[in-house]
Length: 103
Image (tube, rainbow, N blue to C red; front, side, top):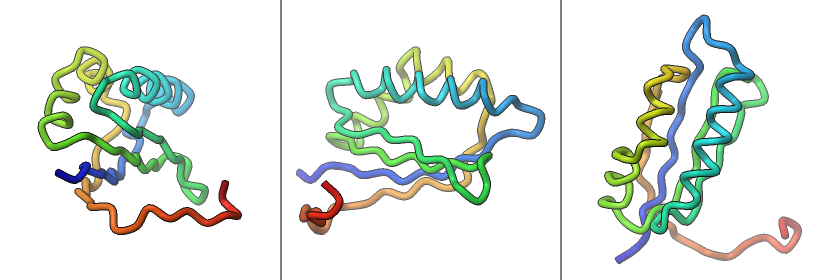
């Protein structure tokens, strides 16, 4: 079974403090990466609109992602209502080659 890759676009809610949201997102990423079936969880901030973020995630499978949303740290982040979800894309890896200039 292939891994489940996720690209999720999220955006700050109006009136929310961006520094607090960034702190919460960083904490979410740190704790999420400790989940045994999470292989990657990156938070990328858009350069042209710092209130927008893309989450790059890699999970063992769909049930791992489902379990993630039941964890206390994910529920705690979501309860703060810092961000809304604009899109979620489920992806499959096509190639694993990396540009030598990237490493």
